[in-house]
Image (cartoon, rainbow, N blue to C red; front, side):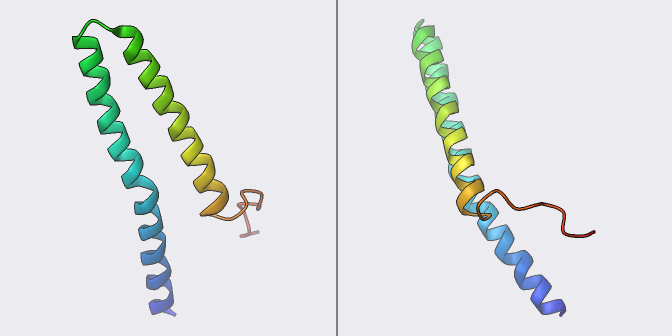
Length: 80
């Protein structure tokens, strides 16, 4: 049983990495673009880019919640 638990944990960590890495890269890119926009005295462009990135991240999070972890409607507590 120990090998099965280890394999399940390893699989869960890989799935978590697939969800984490793209959003981490996006956060870095958006921070750079916002910094450039603010440095160029274009705060409206920085705000627009920030809100666009926020909407994208929320969409990816909702998608991964529904498709990676199931439908999103399951009860989280099965330990009763």
